[in-house]
Image (tube, rainbow, N blue to C red; front, side):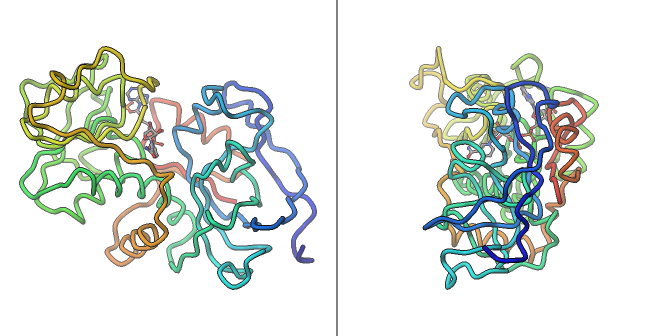
Length: 326
Ligand SMILES: NC(=O)c1ccc[n+]([C@@H]2O[C@H](COP(=O)([O-])OP(=O)(O)OC[C@H]3O[C@@H](n4cnc5c(N)ncnc54)[C@H](OP(=O)(O)O)[C@@H]3O)[C@@H](O)[C@H]2O)c1
């Protein structure tokens, strides 16, 4: 290991499931490289709703103690692939069991399989770049699967989420001429959605959209199986529904008959960010920078305030993307 790399690092470790207080700041050994894995110095990481669920003990495959964190931006600190991942190369990483089967990005350093370390060329500052990999990639993949066309009215259910906000900004830039309608459970948050680029808002009351008929040609469903059937009731004939999230805390569909519950002649699709296409990810990062898409996080915390970042994410005040820096 390089002399410049310290022996220990700061890490946020979860020893048992619970409230944000279980995110404990500790001193841990910096992991040593092993064949096929390289060490990344983490400069910033975006937070995701799935980490809240994991912290709460709702990810059955995750055993504690564990350092959470499913994405990061930083640079290569020690490498086992010097030609593709030279020391100092700026990189991003998402998913691939980071922060789940092995320790993740809530630390100064993370040891990752080379295959899931992606070199990037970008001059975006770390805290802005950190808002892109998981959140924008998910919004972008879903956007493509929705086959958006100018003139369509698009519902985004769970629109105040990081993914929902990123979707609006990307859709505005990549697919002009849409009418975007975002949902929230709180009338007081409607203004946030209009500021983020939505044309209109609809209240989501106890899993029922407060709207009549089938006004939407497309629906991006982030509340997920808890509300998918209700969403389908409001999508026009031939429409497309993309179910990508599970904010409602329900993972599986029950009492759903595709024959009668899908919109007539409609389509149901999804997107999984774990299927990373390195070229598509690099293209997205380049596009965001070149076109000036506003992906700035709505809140930024230092690493030692990870518990506060989780509190915000889980509270009724949190919206958009939360990033934790060094
Ligand atoms: N398929 C994939 O590969 C993939 C990748 C990334 C993320 N995701 C999923 O996408 C979703 C959004 O992720 P995120 O990290 O962007 O979320 P986030 O920012 O943490 O979302 C927060 C928002 O969720 C809404 N919310 C919270 N609990 C809810 C509930 N019970 N019912 C309805 N709305 C609720 C709140 O909106 P209001 O209070 O305003 O209603 C809040 O503003 C998550 O389900 C995540 O797991 C999937």
